[in-house]
Length: 558
Image (cartoon, rainbow, N blue to C red; front, side, top):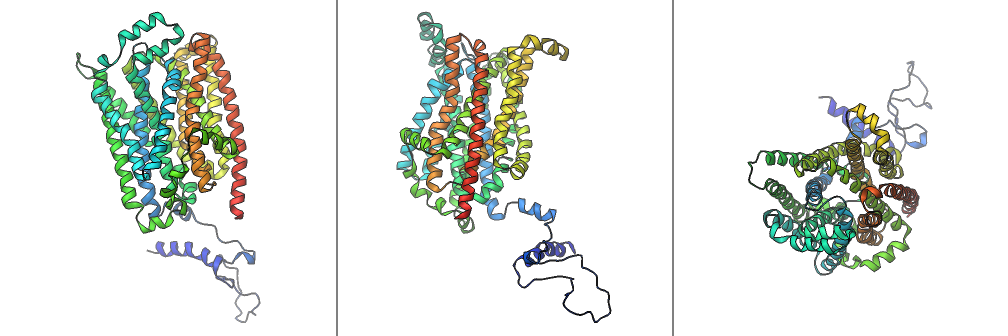
Protein backbone atom coordinates (compact mmCIF):
# COMPACT_ATOMS: atom_id res chain seq x y z
CA UNK A 1 0.00 0.00 0.00
CA UNK A 2 3.03 2.26 0.14
CA UNK A 3 3.53 1.99 -3.63
CA UNK A 4 0.96 4.72 -4.53
CA UNK A 5 2.61 7.11 -2.05
CA UNK A 6 6.04 6.36 -3.47
CA UNK A 7 4.71 6.82 -7.00
CA UNK A 8 3.26 10.25 -6.14
CA UNK A 9 6.51 11.36 -4.50
CA UNK A 10 8.61 10.20 -7.45
CA UNK A 11 6.48 12.19 -9.88
CA UNK A 12 5.80 15.30 -7.82
CA UNK A 13 9.20 16.16 -6.32
CA UNK A 14 11.03 16.83 -9.60
CA UNK A 15 8.28 19.25 -10.62
CA UNK A 16 8.53 21.07 -7.28
CA UNK A 17 12.23 21.73 -7.79
CA UNK A 18 11.58 23.17 -11.25
CA UNK A 19 8.93 25.70 -10.32
CA UNK A 20 9.26 26.62 -6.62
CA UNK A 21 11.48 29.53 -5.56
CA UNK A 22 13.66 29.84 -3.53
CA UNK A 23 15.73 26.69 -3.87
CA UNK A 24 14.31 23.65 -2.17
CA UNK A 25 16.64 21.04 -0.67
CA UNK A 26 15.48 17.85 1.03
CA UNK A 27 17.63 16.16 3.67
CA UNK A 28 20.47 18.55 2.91
CA UNK A 29 21.82 20.87 5.66
CA UNK A 30 22.41 24.55 5.12
CA UNK A 31 26.15 25.12 4.83
CA UNK A 32 25.82 28.69 6.15
CA UNK A 33 24.30 27.63 9.50
CA UNK A 34 26.66 26.56 12.31
CA UNK A 35 26.55 23.00 13.54
CA UNK A 36 25.62 23.28 17.20
CA UNK A 37 24.14 19.87 17.70
CA UNK A 38 27.41 17.98 17.75
CA UNK A 39 26.01 15.53 15.26
CA UNK A 40 28.13 14.72 12.26
CA UNK A 41 26.14 15.63 9.20
CA UNK A 42 26.26 13.47 6.11
CA UNK A 43 25.13 14.33 2.60
CA UNK A 44 21.60 13.30 1.81
CA UNK A 45 20.90 10.75 -0.88
CA UNK A 46 18.14 12.84 -2.50
CA UNK A 47 18.81 16.47 -3.45
CA UNK A 48 16.37 18.57 -5.45
CA UNK A 49 17.30 22.06 -6.60
CA UNK A 50 16.52 24.21 -9.59
CA UNK A 51 18.87 24.63 -12.51
CA UNK A 52 20.49 27.74 -11.00
CA UNK A 53 22.05 25.67 -8.24
CA UNK A 54 23.97 23.57 -10.68
CA UNK A 55 22.40 20.30 -9.45
CA UNK A 56 20.51 18.28 -12.03
CA UNK A 57 17.06 16.97 -11.07
CA UNK A 58 16.53 13.27 -10.59
CA UNK A 59 15.88 11.47 -13.87
CA UNK A 60 12.38 10.22 -14.59
CA UNK A 61 11.73 6.62 -13.63
CA UNK A 62 10.88 3.90 -16.10
CA UNK A 63 7.30 4.03 -14.89
CA UNK A 64 7.16 7.75 -15.67
CA UNK A 65 8.56 7.16 -19.14
CA UNK A 66 6.01 4.42 -19.78
CA UNK A 67 3.24 6.67 -18.53
CA UNK A 68 4.35 9.37 -20.99
CA UNK A 69 3.88 6.91 -23.86
CA UNK A 70 0.28 6.09 -22.94
CA UNK A 71 -2.33 8.41 -24.48
CA UNK A 72 -4.42 10.50 -22.10
CA UNK A 73 -8.17 9.75 -21.84
CA UNK A 74 -8.92 12.70 -24.13
CA UNK A 75 -6.35 11.51 -26.66
CA UNK A 76 -7.67 7.95 -26.50
CA UNK A 77 -11.14 9.18 -27.33
CA UNK A 78 -9.79 10.39 -30.68
CA UNK A 79 -7.05 7.89 -31.38
CA UNK A 80 -8.92 4.63 -30.73
CA UNK A 81 -11.72 5.27 -33.29
CA UNK A 82 -9.12 6.56 -35.77
CA UNK A 83 -7.06 3.41 -35.27
CA UNK A 84 -10.11 1.21 -35.84
CA UNK A 85 -10.95 3.21 -38.97
CA UNK A 86 -7.44 2.67 -40.27
CA UNK A 87 -7.70 -1.05 -39.43
CA UNK A 88 -10.91 -1.37 -41.46
CA UNK A 89 -9.54 0.63 -44.40
CA UNK A 90 -6.37 -1.46 -44.62
CA UNK A 91 -8.32 -4.71 -44.17
CA UNK A 92 -10.38 -3.82 -47.23
CA UNK A 93 -7.38 -2.54 -49.18
CA UNK A 94 -5.46 -5.78 -48.64
CA UNK A 95 -8.37 -7.91 -49.86
CA UNK A 96 -8.97 -5.62 -52.84
CA UNK A 97 -5.27 -5.49 -53.74
CA UNK A 98 -4.95 -9.28 -53.79
CA UNK A 99 -8.28 -9.80 -55.59
CA UNK A 100 -7.61 -7.30 -58.38
CA UNK A 101 -4.35 -9.02 -59.23
CA UNK A 102 -5.99 -12.45 -59.37
CA UNK A 103 -8.76 -11.15 -61.66
CA UNK A 104 -6.49 -9.34 -64.12
CA UNK A 105 -3.46 -11.62 -64.27
CA UNK A 106 -5.36 -14.93 -64.47
CA UNK A 107 -8.14 -13.68 -66.77
CA UNK A 108 -8.45 -14.96 -70.38
CA UNK A 109 -5.59 -13.31 -72.27
CA UNK A 110 -4.38 -11.67 -69.09
CA UNK A 111 -0.87 -11.47 -67.67
CA UNK A 112 1.35 -9.11 -65.69
CA UNK A 113 2.06 -7.07 -68.84
CA UNK A 114 -1.50 -5.73 -68.65
CA UNK A 115 -0.78 -3.82 -65.45
CA UNK A 116 1.28 -0.98 -67.02
CA UNK A 117 -1.45 -0.41 -69.62
CA UNK A 118 -4.14 -0.48 -66.95
CA UNK A 119 -2.36 2.09 -64.82
CA UNK A 120 -1.76 4.41 -67.78
CA UNK A 121 -5.01 4.22 -69.73
CA UNK A 122 -7.52 3.32 -67.02
CA UNK A 123 -6.18 4.27 -63.58
CA UNK A 124 -4.76 7.68 -64.52
CA UNK A 125 -7.97 8.88 -66.23
CA UNK A 126 -9.90 7.51 -63.26
CA UNK A 127 -7.73 9.48 -60.83
CA UNK A 128 -8.17 12.69 -62.86
CA UNK A 129 -11.94 12.12 -63.04
CA UNK A 130 -12.09 11.59 -59.30
CA UNK A 131 -10.12 14.80 -58.71
CA UNK A 132 -12.63 16.80 -60.75
CA UNK A 133 -15.61 15.23 -58.96
CA UNK A 134 -14.00 15.60 -55.54
CA UNK A 135 -13.25 19.28 -56.14
CA UNK A 136 -16.88 19.91 -57.07
CA UNK A 137 -18.11 17.99 -54.04
CA UNK A 138 -15.92 20.18 -51.82
CA UNK A 139 -17.35 23.30 -53.42
CA UNK A 140 -20.98 22.26 -52.93
CA UNK A 141 -21.15 20.04 -49.82
CA UNK A 142 -19.95 20.32 -46.20
CA UNK A 143 -16.98 18.11 -45.23
CA UNK A 144 -19.09 15.40 -43.54
CA UNK A 145 -21.25 14.89 -46.60
CA UNK A 146 -18.17 14.91 -48.83
CA UNK A 147 -16.83 11.95 -46.86
CA UNK A 148 -20.07 9.99 -47.20
CA UNK A 149 -20.54 10.90 -50.87
CA UNK A 150 -16.98 9.77 -51.65
CA UNK A 151 -16.92 6.41 -49.88
CA UNK A 152 -20.49 5.30 -50.70
CA UNK A 153 -19.85 4.61 -54.44
CA UNK A 154 -16.92 2.35 -53.54
CA UNK A 155 -19.00 0.21 -51.18
CA UNK A 156 -21.89 0.06 -53.66
CA UNK A 157 -19.63 -0.99 -56.55
CA UNK A 158 -17.87 -3.79 -54.66
CA UNK A 159 -21.22 -5.12 -53.46
CA UNK A 160 -22.59 -5.06 -57.01
CA UNK A 161 -19.45 -6.67 -58.45
CA UNK A 162 -19.68 -9.73 -56.22
CA UNK A 163 -23.45 -10.13 -56.46
CA UNK A 164 -24.25 -9.03 -60.03
CA UNK A 165 -21.36 -8.07 -62.30
CA UNK A 166 -19.05 -11.07 -61.94
CA UNK A 167 -21.84 -13.69 -62.27
CA UNK A 168 -22.92 -11.95 -65.52
CA UNK A 169 -19.38 -11.59 -66.93
CA UNK A 170 -20.03 -13.98 -69.85
CA UNK A 171 -22.68 -11.67 -71.27
CA UNK A 172 -20.91 -8.44 -70.29
CA UNK A 173 -17.50 -9.23 -71.78
CA UNK A 174 -17.28 -8.63 -75.56
CA UNK A 175 -15.30 -11.77 -76.38
CA UNK A 176 -16.34 -11.93 -80.05
CA UNK A 177 -15.39 -8.32 -80.70
CA UNK A 178 -12.07 -8.81 -78.90
CA UNK A 179 -11.27 -11.90 -80.98
CA UNK A 180 -11.92 -9.91 -84.14
CA UNK A 181 -9.67 -7.05 -83.00
CA UNK A 182 -6.83 -9.49 -82.40
CA UNK A 183 -6.91 -10.40 -86.11
CA UNK A 184 -6.62 -6.82 -87.40
CA UNK A 185 -4.50 -5.00 -84.81
CA UNK A 186 -0.72 -5.23 -84.32
CA UNK A 187 0.56 -7.34 -81.43
CA UNK A 188 1.75 -4.23 -79.57
CA UNK A 189 -1.91 -3.36 -78.93
CA UNK A 190 -2.93 -6.81 -77.68
CA UNK A 191 -2.82 -5.68 -74.00
CA UNK A 192 -5.38 -2.98 -74.82
CA UNK A 193 -7.58 -5.59 -76.49
CA UNK A 194 -7.34 -7.76 -73.38
CA UNK A 195 -8.42 -4.79 -71.23
CA UNK A 196 -11.35 -4.26 -73.60
CA UNK A 197 -12.27 -7.94 -73.40
CA UNK A 198 -12.19 -7.99 -69.58
CA UNK A 199 -13.46 -4.45 -68.99
CA UNK A 200 -15.30 -5.35 -65.77
CA UNK A 201 -12.03 -6.66 -64.30
CA UNK A 202 -10.26 -3.48 -65.42
CA UNK A 203 -12.97 -1.41 -63.71
CA UNK A 204 -12.57 -3.45 -60.52
CA UNK A 205 -8.79 -2.98 -60.71
CA UNK A 206 -9.21 0.79 -60.97
CA UNK A 207 -11.69 1.01 -58.10
CA UNK A 208 -9.39 -1.09 -55.92
CA UNK A 209 -6.44 1.19 -56.76
CA UNK A 210 -8.50 4.29 -56.04
CA UNK A 211 -9.51 2.86 -52.66
CA UNK A 212 -5.88 3.06 -51.61
CA UNK A 213 -5.29 6.62 -52.81
CA UNK A 214 -8.73 8.08 -52.12
CA UNK A 215 -9.92 6.43 -48.92
CA UNK A 216 -6.49 6.11 -47.29
CA UNK A 217 -4.69 9.26 -48.45
CA UNK A 218 -7.47 11.78 -49.02
CA UNK A 219 -10.28 10.77 -46.67
CA UNK A 220 -8.52 9.15 -43.72
CA UNK A 221 -5.25 11.07 -43.50
CA UNK A 222 -7.00 14.33 -44.34
CA UNK A 223 -9.45 13.75 -41.48
CA UNK A 224 -6.70 12.59 -39.10
CA UNK A 225 -4.55 15.65 -39.82
CA UNK A 226 -7.55 17.89 -39.17
CA UNK A 227 -8.33 16.60 -35.68
CA UNK A 228 -4.83 15.62 -34.52
CA UNK A 229 -2.52 18.25 -33.06
CA UNK A 230 1.14 18.54 -34.00
CA UNK A 231 2.19 17.25 -30.58
CA UNK A 232 -0.08 14.22 -30.86
CA UNK A 233 1.09 13.51 -34.42
CA UNK A 234 4.76 13.48 -33.45
CA UNK A 235 3.97 11.27 -30.48
CA UNK A 236 1.59 8.74 -32.02
CA UNK A 237 1.95 8.73 -35.83
CA UNK A 238 4.93 6.31 -35.75
CA UNK A 239 2.76 3.88 -33.77
CA UNK A 240 -0.57 5.01 -35.18
CA UNK A 241 -0.85 2.14 -37.61
CA UNK A 242 0.39 -0.49 -35.15
CA UNK A 243 -3.08 -1.79 -34.38
CA UNK A 244 -4.33 -1.01 -37.87
CA UNK A 245 -1.68 -3.14 -39.55
CA UNK A 246 -2.96 -6.16 -37.69
CA UNK A 247 -5.50 -5.89 -40.52
CA UNK A 248 -2.87 -7.19 -42.92
CA UNK A 249 -2.57 -10.35 -40.85
CA UNK A 250 -6.31 -10.77 -40.38
CA UNK A 251 -7.11 -10.06 -44.03
CA UNK A 252 -4.43 -12.50 -45.17
CA UNK A 253 -5.84 -15.18 -42.92
CA UNK A 254 -9.35 -14.40 -44.14
CA UNK A 255 -8.21 -14.85 -47.75
CA UNK A 256 -6.66 -18.20 -46.80
CA UNK A 257 -9.90 -19.19 -45.03
CA UNK A 258 -11.87 -18.37 -48.17
CA UNK A 259 -9.41 -20.42 -50.22
CA UNK A 260 -9.97 -23.43 -47.94
CA UNK A 261 -13.74 -23.03 -48.21
CA UNK A 262 -13.42 -22.82 -51.99
CA UNK A 263 -11.33 -26.00 -52.08
CA UNK A 264 -14.08 -27.88 -50.22
CA UNK A 265 -16.88 -26.88 -52.57
CA UNK A 266 -18.33 -29.60 -54.86
CA UNK A 267 -17.62 -29.67 -58.56
CA UNK A 268 -20.05 -28.08 -60.98
CA UNK A 269 -20.30 -24.68 -59.31
CA UNK A 270 -18.27 -21.51 -59.81
CA UNK A 271 -15.84 -21.87 -56.91
CA UNK A 272 -13.97 -18.63 -57.57
CA UNK A 273 -17.25 -16.76 -57.95
CA UNK A 274 -18.45 -18.06 -54.57
CA UNK A 275 -15.21 -17.04 -52.84
CA UNK A 276 -15.33 -13.64 -54.56
CA UNK A 277 -18.77 -13.07 -53.03
CA UNK A 278 -17.37 -13.88 -49.57
CA UNK A 279 -14.49 -11.46 -50.08
CA UNK A 280 -16.76 -8.64 -51.26
CA UNK A 281 -19.14 -9.28 -48.35
CA UNK A 282 -16.26 -8.66 -45.94
CA UNK A 283 -15.28 -5.49 -47.81
CA UNK A 284 -18.83 -4.14 -47.58
CA UNK A 285 -19.10 -5.03 -43.88
CA UNK A 286 -15.91 -3.18 -42.98
CA UNK A 287 -16.93 -0.33 -45.29
CA UNK A 288 -20.09 0.07 -43.22
CA UNK A 289 -17.96 0.05 -40.06
CA UNK A 290 -15.81 2.88 -41.48
CA UNK A 291 -18.89 4.99 -42.13
CA UNK A 292 -20.26 4.25 -38.65
CA UNK A 293 -16.96 5.19 -36.96
CA UNK A 294 -16.72 8.44 -38.89
CA UNK A 295 -20.28 9.34 -37.92
CA UNK A 296 -19.54 8.49 -34.29
CA UNK A 297 -16.51 10.76 -34.25
CA UNK A 298 -18.37 13.64 -35.87
CA UNK A 299 -21.49 13.37 -33.74
CA UNK A 300 -19.96 12.37 -30.40
CA UNK A 301 -16.17 12.60 -30.08
CA UNK A 302 -15.54 15.97 -31.72
CA UNK A 303 -18.48 17.53 -29.86
CA UNK A 304 -16.96 16.61 -26.51
CA UNK A 305 -15.74 19.91 -24.93
CA UNK A 306 -12.50 18.29 -23.73
CA UNK A 307 -11.71 16.99 -27.22
CA UNK A 308 -12.77 20.24 -28.88
CA UNK A 309 -10.38 22.15 -26.62
CA UNK A 310 -7.42 20.15 -28.01
CA UNK A 311 -8.21 20.97 -31.65
CA UNK A 312 -6.20 23.68 -33.35
CA UNK A 313 -7.97 26.81 -34.64
CA UNK A 314 -7.24 25.67 -38.20
CA UNK A 315 -9.09 22.42 -37.58
CA UNK A 316 -12.10 24.28 -36.18
CA UNK A 317 -12.21 26.50 -39.26
CA UNK A 318 -11.52 23.75 -41.77
CA UNK A 319 -15.17 23.23 -42.64
CA UNK A 320 -15.44 26.86 -43.69
CA UNK A 321 -12.21 27.05 -45.63
CA UNK A 322 -12.02 23.59 -47.15
CA UNK A 323 -13.79 24.44 -50.39
CA UNK A 324 -11.56 27.44 -50.97
CA UNK A 325 -8.41 25.34 -50.86
CA UNK A 326 -9.46 22.87 -53.55
CA UNK A 327 -7.24 23.22 -56.61
CA UNK A 328 -7.50 21.93 -60.11
CA UNK A 329 -4.75 20.23 -62.07
CA UNK A 330 -3.21 23.48 -63.41
CA UNK A 331 -3.25 25.24 -60.02
CA UNK A 332 -1.78 22.16 -58.33
CA UNK A 333 1.06 21.99 -60.86
CA UNK A 334 1.94 25.67 -60.43
CA UNK A 335 1.91 25.41 -56.66
CA UNK A 336 4.00 22.23 -56.67
CA UNK A 337 6.67 23.75 -58.93
CA UNK A 338 6.88 27.01 -56.95
CA UNK A 339 7.48 25.41 -53.53
CA UNK A 340 10.72 23.42 -52.98
CA UNK A 341 9.26 21.93 -49.79
CA UNK A 342 6.13 20.62 -51.54
CA UNK A 343 8.12 19.66 -54.63
CA UNK A 344 10.42 17.40 -52.59
CA UNK A 345 7.42 15.83 -50.86
CA UNK A 346 5.86 15.14 -54.25
CA UNK A 347 9.13 13.58 -55.44
CA UNK A 348 8.99 11.18 -52.48
CA UNK A 349 5.47 10.10 -53.42
CA UNK A 350 6.23 9.87 -57.14
CA UNK A 351 9.47 7.95 -56.61
CA UNK A 352 7.81 5.43 -54.28
CA UNK A 353 4.92 4.88 -56.71
CA UNK A 354 7.20 4.40 -59.70
CA UNK A 355 9.65 2.15 -57.83
CA UNK A 356 7.07 -0.17 -56.31
CA UNK A 357 5.22 -0.35 -59.62
CA UNK A 358 8.32 -1.45 -61.53
CA UNK A 359 9.21 -4.02 -58.88
CA UNK A 360 5.68 -5.40 -58.47
CA UNK A 361 4.98 -5.89 -62.18
CA UNK A 362 8.27 -7.72 -62.74
CA UNK A 363 7.66 -9.87 -59.65
CA UNK A 364 4.06 -10.69 -60.57
CA UNK A 365 5.12 -11.84 -64.02
CA UNK A 366 7.30 -14.47 -62.33
CA UNK A 367 4.58 -15.19 -59.78
CA UNK A 368 2.14 -16.21 -62.50
CA UNK A 369 4.72 -18.59 -63.96
CA UNK A 370 5.12 -20.23 -60.55
CA UNK A 371 1.38 -20.24 -59.67
CA UNK A 372 -0.72 -20.30 -62.88
CA UNK A 373 -3.85 -21.57 -61.05
CA UNK A 374 -6.05 -18.75 -59.61
CA UNK A 375 -6.65 -20.69 -56.38
CA UNK A 376 -2.93 -21.29 -55.78
CA UNK A 377 -2.19 -17.67 -56.71
CA UNK A 378 -4.81 -16.40 -54.26
CA UNK A 379 -3.55 -18.67 -51.46
CA UNK A 380 0.02 -17.43 -51.98
CA UNK A 381 -1.18 -13.81 -51.83
CA UNK A 382 -2.97 -14.61 -48.57
CA UNK A 383 0.31 -15.82 -47.06
CA UNK A 384 2.00 -12.77 -48.53
CA UNK A 385 -0.45 -10.42 -46.79
CA UNK A 386 -0.06 -12.23 -43.47
CA UNK A 387 3.73 -11.98 -43.67
CA UNK A 388 3.45 -8.30 -44.60
CA UNK A 389 1.30 -7.63 -41.55
CA UNK A 390 3.65 -9.50 -39.22
CA UNK A 391 6.75 -7.68 -40.46
CA UNK A 392 4.89 -4.37 -40.36
CA UNK A 393 4.03 -4.89 -36.68
CA UNK A 394 7.72 -5.34 -35.89
CA UNK A 395 8.60 -2.30 -38.00
CA UNK A 396 5.92 -0.23 -36.27
CA UNK A 397 7.49 -0.97 -32.89
CA UNK A 398 10.98 -0.22 -34.22
CA UNK A 399 9.84 3.00 -35.92
CA UNK A 400 9.22 4.72 -32.58
CA UNK A 401 12.86 4.11 -31.64
CA UNK A 402 14.07 5.17 -35.10
CA UNK A 403 12.19 8.48 -35.01
CA UNK A 404 13.24 9.21 -31.42
CA UNK A 405 16.90 8.21 -31.74
CA UNK A 406 17.78 9.18 -35.32
CA UNK A 407 15.11 11.65 -36.43
CA UNK A 408 13.04 12.22 -39.56
CA UNK A 409 15.89 12.09 -42.07
CA UNK A 410 17.13 8.60 -41.20
CA UNK A 411 13.57 7.26 -40.97
CA UNK A 412 12.76 8.62 -44.43
CA UNK A 413 15.92 7.07 -45.94
CA UNK A 414 15.09 3.51 -44.82
CA UNK A 415 12.34 2.78 -47.38
CA UNK A 416 14.40 3.66 -50.51
CA UNK A 417 17.45 1.92 -49.02
CA UNK A 418 15.44 -1.28 -48.48
CA UNK A 419 14.18 -1.16 -52.06
CA UNK A 420 17.70 -0.61 -53.38
CA UNK A 421 19.30 -3.51 -51.50
CA UNK A 422 16.55 -6.03 -52.25
CA UNK A 423 16.28 -4.94 -55.90
CA UNK A 424 19.92 -5.85 -56.49
CA UNK A 425 19.31 -9.45 -55.35
CA UNK A 426 15.95 -9.76 -57.11
CA UNK A 427 17.12 -8.57 -60.53
CA UNK A 428 20.34 -10.56 -60.31
CA UNK A 429 18.27 -13.75 -59.90
CA UNK A 430 16.27 -12.84 -63.01
CA UNK A 431 19.11 -11.59 -65.21
CA UNK A 432 21.74 -14.11 -64.12
CA UNK A 433 19.61 -17.15 -63.36
CA UNK A 434 22.18 -19.48 -64.91
CA UNK A 435 24.88 -18.35 -62.52
CA UNK A 436 22.54 -18.91 -59.57
CA UNK A 437 21.36 -22.35 -60.78
CA UNK A 438 24.02 -24.46 -58.96
CA UNK A 439 23.36 -22.63 -55.69
CA UNK A 440 19.60 -22.98 -56.09
CA UNK A 441 19.94 -26.65 -56.94
CA UNK A 442 21.95 -27.21 -53.79
CA UNK A 443 19.23 -25.35 -51.81
CA UNK A 444 16.54 -27.58 -53.34
CA UNK A 445 14.78 -24.92 -55.40
CA UNK A 446 14.96 -23.22 -58.80
CA UNK A 447 16.00 -19.70 -59.85
CA UNK A 448 12.35 -18.98 -60.72
CA UNK A 449 11.04 -19.92 -57.26
CA UNK A 450 13.97 -18.12 -55.64
CA UNK A 451 13.11 -14.98 -57.62
CA UNK A 452 9.48 -15.31 -56.50
CA UNK A 453 10.49 -15.65 -52.84
CA UNK A 454 13.07 -12.83 -52.98
CA UNK A 455 10.55 -10.64 -54.79
CA UNK A 456 7.99 -11.44 -52.10
CA UNK A 457 10.52 -10.51 -49.41
CA UNK A 458 11.26 -7.29 -51.26
CA UNK A 459 7.59 -6.36 -51.47
CA UNK A 460 6.99 -7.31 -47.83
CA UNK A 461 9.90 -5.19 -46.59
CA UNK A 462 9.06 -2.25 -48.84
CA UNK A 463 5.37 -2.25 -47.89
CA UNK A 464 6.08 -2.66 -44.17
CA UNK A 465 8.59 0.20 -44.26
CA UNK A 466 6.02 2.27 -46.17
CA UNK A 467 3.31 1.73 -43.55
CA UNK A 468 5.62 2.18 -40.57
CA UNK A 469 8.05 4.85 -41.80
CA UNK A 470 7.21 6.33 -45.21
CA UNK A 471 3.57 7.24 -44.49
CA UNK A 472 4.30 8.76 -41.03
CA UNK A 473 7.26 10.68 -42.52
CA UNK A 474 5.07 12.06 -45.28
CA UNK A 475 2.32 13.14 -42.88
CA UNK A 476 4.80 14.57 -40.36
CA UNK A 477 6.26 16.75 -43.08
CA UNK A 478 2.92 18.60 -43.24
CA UNK A 479 3.06 19.52 -39.55
CA UNK A 480 5.53 22.39 -39.92
CA UNK A 481 3.51 24.05 -42.70
CA UNK A 482 0.88 26.72 -42.07
CA UNK A 483 -2.78 25.98 -42.75
CA UNK A 484 -2.78 27.24 -46.34
CA UNK A 485 0.45 25.44 -47.28
CA UNK A 486 -0.78 22.27 -45.61
CA UNK A 487 -4.07 22.10 -47.50
CA UNK A 488 -2.71 23.29 -50.85
CA UNK A 489 0.36 21.10 -50.58
CA UNK A 490 -1.69 18.00 -49.83
CA UNK A 491 -4.06 18.85 -52.68
CA UNK A 492 -1.12 19.22 -55.09
CA UNK A 493 0.44 15.92 -54.05
CA UNK A 494 -2.89 14.07 -54.13
CA UNK A 495 -3.73 15.38 -57.60
CA UNK A 496 -0.29 15.07 -59.22
CA UNK A 497 2.01 12.97 -57.04
CA UNK A 498 -0.12 9.85 -56.57
CA UNK A 499 -1.30 9.42 -60.19
CA UNK A 500 2.10 10.32 -61.61
CA UNK A 501 3.86 7.85 -59.33
CA UNK A 502 1.50 5.01 -60.19
CA UNK A 503 1.21 5.70 -63.91
CA UNK A 504 4.77 6.97 -64.45
CA UNK A 505 6.34 3.58 -63.83
CA UNK A 506 3.61 1.95 -65.90
CA UNK A 507 4.22 4.30 -68.81
CA UNK A 508 7.94 3.46 -68.76
CA UNK A 509 7.16 -0.26 -68.76
CA UNK A 510 4.61 0.19 -71.51
CA UNK A 511 7.14 1.90 -73.78
CA UNK A 512 9.74 -0.79 -73.09
CA UNK A 513 7.26 -3.64 -73.66
CA UNK A 514 6.19 -2.18 -77.02
CA UNK A 515 9.82 -1.46 -78.00
CA UNK A 516 11.44 -4.66 -76.75
CA UNK A 517 8.53 -6.99 -77.42
CA UNK A 518 7.98 -8.39 -73.91
CA UNK A 519 8.38 -7.64 -70.23
CA UNK A 520 11.15 -10.23 -69.88
CA UNK A 521 13.24 -8.52 -72.58
CA UNK A 522 12.71 -5.16 -70.85
CA UNK A 523 13.95 -6.33 -67.44
CA UNK A 524 17.59 -5.09 -67.72
CA UNK A 525 16.44 -1.61 -68.67
CA UNK A 526 13.82 -1.59 -65.92
CA UNK A 527 16.52 -2.43 -63.38
CA UNK A 528 18.68 0.50 -64.52
CA UNK A 529 15.71 2.90 -64.46
CA UNK A 530 14.71 1.69 -60.99
CA UNK A 531 18.16 2.42 -59.58
CA UNK A 532 18.03 5.92 -61.11
CA UNK A 533 14.63 6.61 -59.54
CA UNK A 534 15.84 5.46 -56.13
CA UNK A 535 18.86 7.80 -56.44
CA UNK A 536 16.53 10.77 -57.10
CA UNK A 537 14.40 9.62 -54.14
CA UNK A 538 17.41 9.62 -51.81
CA UNK A 539 18.40 13.12 -52.96
CA UNK A 540 14.86 14.41 -52.36
CA UNK A 541 14.85 12.97 -48.81
CA UNK A 542 18.16 14.67 -48.00
CA UNK A 543 16.94 18.01 -49.36
CA UNK A 544 13.58 17.79 -47.59
CA UNK A 545 15.25 16.91 -44.28
CA UNK A 546 17.19 20.19 -44.43
CA UNK A 547 14.02 22.15 -45.22
CA UNK A 548 12.16 20.50 -42.34
CA UNK A 549 14.90 21.47 -39.89
CA UNK A 550 14.79 25.05 -41.19
CA UNK A 551 11.01 25.11 -40.74
CA UNK A 552 11.31 23.78 -37.19
CA UNK A 553 13.83 26.51 -36.30
CA UNK A 554 11.63 29.13 -37.94
CA UNK A 555 8.53 27.97 -36.06
CA UNK A 556 10.45 27.81 -32.76
CA UNK A 557 11.52 31.44 -33.12
CA UNK A 558 7.95 32.66 -33.62
